[in-house]
Length: 213
Image (cartoon, rainbow, N blue to C red; front, side, top):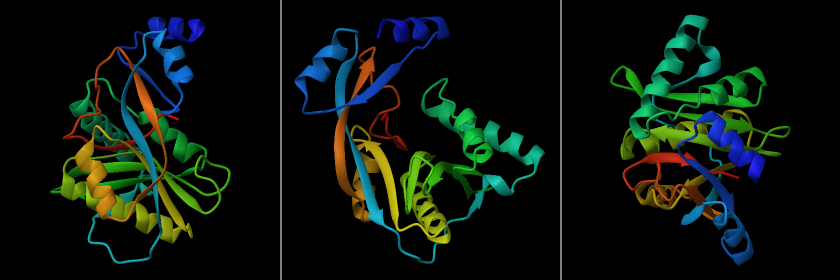
């Protein structure tokens, strides 16, 4: 852990975190010694993919031209920065496209970016065989959050995936409740540990999907 913490210091990381076994006192105790504090559970959830009509206005990052991509990345950064200053997943978006891991779903609302999601699809990715894994997703409101999940399910159906998987921190209770209403069920759960002991972007009003495995 010492070299890892030294890297955090060199990078100027303001908020660090990890995912570990909620039932293991040894794991929680180990990381606690290094300044990480357990907060809320994270549920790793999934649902069967169904081919259905969606009213969501969504598009794909892979279909954008170079100039449009730069504008899109700026909009994605602005959206995440509103939720937590400095939160930026531009590298992850570029990696999904460059490595052919899946797709970044873009949700439009009133001519602006209403949300986006990084999706890994199928074998050879973090998703696994026949799965679409939402590695990161965020929306501006609960209504748009529903639409974003519908768009991701539409992408999964288009790619021939049979299961949609996503993680959500239970501190974001509104997002978690909506996922349950949409048919997601918890497969496994763990606890996120934070350094320092602050919520970061895991707050009730934040509609965001991720897990720190």
